[in-house]
Image (tube, rainbow over all chains, first blue to last red):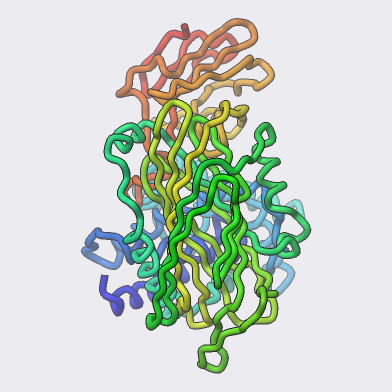
Length: 154
Length: 370
């Protein structure tokens, strides 16, 4: 891939990939790693993509796969935890939402992120993540319920 | 859900796109350099390793303080709580150092079996040990650097020190090695007093020599990265290790994770992990298999399928299913973007009536338990 073309793709999708990874792994250090790994794979990838949408879909799959692998790594369970970073929240309500999101299981967070922030429909996400629509619907439903429950509890 | 969008808008990567792109391009180039010096795999052995899922574990801590009080070797040992770490075999070793693409030097050395440290002008490498089981080879090593290069106000400088006081920690990653290479990634978690960061990565491959021995090869490249993401000092090294394989370690059974089958049925995922990386999955429709009910789990190495032997004498042999009903995959050799589930060797099916374990249904076919 040409360097210029690659830089343009990074410019276009960097935030999306980072936020998706962050939604999965829940911290910036790991999300940065996954971000770099995903784009390295794109840079060295021999696939040709017809459209930027195809690149985006490919990146989403790779990012989710990398995030899953990362969370499954035994090292994750053995290492000393880094201090949790925070993001600046506008008000108490936003803080509660952030805390509730953080408390969700990773696959629910991802489902919610792809649905509400990237605007993917259920069928599109099922195709992207190579899973059934019923599974996607289930994750979204359970994610919403848990989120609602947690916010109400607070 | 605008609030959700607003929230995610605040989650942003540290690097600018240009910096990230530069870093990745530099890393890709360094990895290419690393690949050039790797020795070709033995063809005969390469044929064997298609059936072997090996995992390569590399730990690259530098100072104990950077590990927040934890000792990587202790962590490593605790992970392999049943095994001793013993440096074994001979490490053949050579390296190339490039400084800012201008200077190149080569250095070839051999680490004798009774030595596990090699010291060069630039760094000291200590092999802590190896651990391995039927599936995996793990290596732990420490590496210390001196005379780090860095940028200051756009100017390349070199800190000349006896040993660098720079404190950084590179997080190791575990890697599948089903017979091929895989990059080893790392990152800086903390750097004290210097505006530099560090990456370490490399690749490795293995030959399966015999029933109880692996030949493991490692190559890696390391370098300092300045704030613009430029690797200043890539290095590459190849090492060849011969590793004895100790007995298979204990398995872990994880249960009670709700999943949905491809056909929409909901159930409970049971996962057997041999080493947290080689996992076998199967699904129960009603309740999870309980670990305390299990006497032992044997693994059919040819089929990568587990046999569950329960204390009451029941046997659930997931290797008994027909090959076409088994979903298998392997490591990093999957095409990019392929579903991660295929990253693992696994069996995905439904155990019918788990309380009695009379049959197992996998992808719509029912198989009697032996």
